[in-house]
Amino acid sequence: MTAPVLEARDLAKRFPVAGGFGGPKRVVHALSGVSLSVAAGETLAVVGESGCGKSTLANCLTGLMEPSGGSLLLEGADVAGILRDDPMRFRRRVQIVFQDPYASLNPRRSVGDTVADALRIHRLAPRARRRTRVAELLAEVGLAPEHLDRYPHELSGGQRQRVAIARALAVEPAVVVCDEPVSALDVSIQAQVINLLRDIQARRGVAYVFISHNLALVRHIARRIAVMYLGQVVELGDAAVLRRRMLHPYSRALFAAAPEIGRPSHDPDRPPPLSGDVPSPIDPPSGCRFHTRCPHAEARCGAEEPALRAVDDRLVRCHLAEGFSIPKEP
Ligand code: SF4
Picture (cartoon, rainbow, N blue to C red):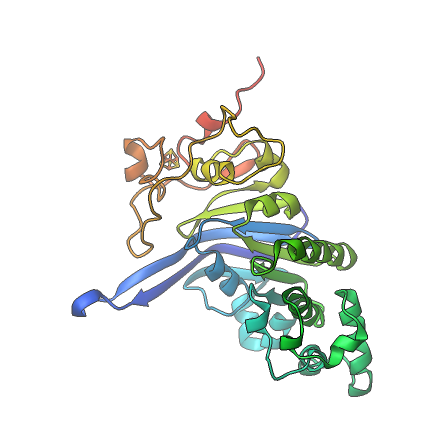
């Protein structure tokens, strides 16, 4: 694999929360030992149920939250050091596109001013050339010059997300973290925005960390997929490998529940759907965090935490992963 542009090593994020009725403070374990990376021109999708830590991961990767442990590397350099010595460099290289474009745009700034602000703050275009450069960026995301003087409330949801993408691109990032970038949009618009992101990646070689709960979409756009459960990566590998077969019982159940064109609804290999609630990240289950919901759990699973390890061309966090592999041809 090519050298990563952004890499998380053993990342942890813990939040102290008040204990009930004056009890001692408790800790939410939002991320525990998360290691993953993304290379130039690649899309790494991060998927999981709500509460699995996806958005906390997005915030840590983009410097919006400080990790409690582990490290982040940007183009091989320690992010903590970059943020201390040259935070603007980090902000330029790593951008984020949020789920709700309306909330992420300033309603009192025109489209032109919003994108121009990024150029001005990072000193990327002299004042005389700024409007022309903004028009070029808007054209790149499929907006016309007349959108320059419009305000967010005058745009559709899809147009607002295009403005947010143009603002992110203005600073020529190496990585864009896309946090559920189309889930607030009409289905008919989602495909347009996804195709736009793909075109931009083909042209610019930008890396995407694509946070999503839309598994059908993830299958379509990701080169690699990381599945998260209760703050941990439980399976990580090439999308093509995972599309053939997932090994972790959680990822198998999660993806089995997602519609897939051409897959019969009575597929005998389809794992049972997920049952039970996601346990609290304040007091995650001992051993394998999935053991309270796993149909294959055995005594060892509740006592011993499985490591993320290589099995069948991917990383998987399950004691019994080999048992879920496709049987080898005799
Ligand atoms: Fe299920 Fe055990 Fe594997 Fe955890 S380690 S996913 S409980 S089989």
